[in-house]
Image (tube, rainbow, N blue to C red):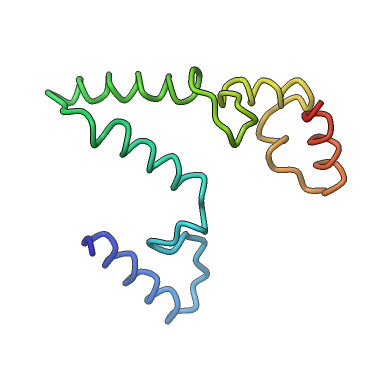
Length: 119
């Protein structure tokens, strides 16, 4: 277990003992935030484990290239084989802005949106 995980567990224990509400993903629980865990896995498997970095500038350049590929070039099956950039533009067409489209409050509106997007 990494030192960061020890710190996380200590903070969670302190928050529980002091009745402090904690809005945090528990360490090592993939199911609590599958999207970010998938991104982290892809970043690790496709970049961090594959490349050696000569300098901080080299790491920044390679990360920028990977991020561009991930967001604008490579289709994602979870987005209907669109890139995140294409998916965001599709949502903007129907709703006006992506953040509002993603965080729909009412089920009926969300169902209408998904019906329109599936056409």
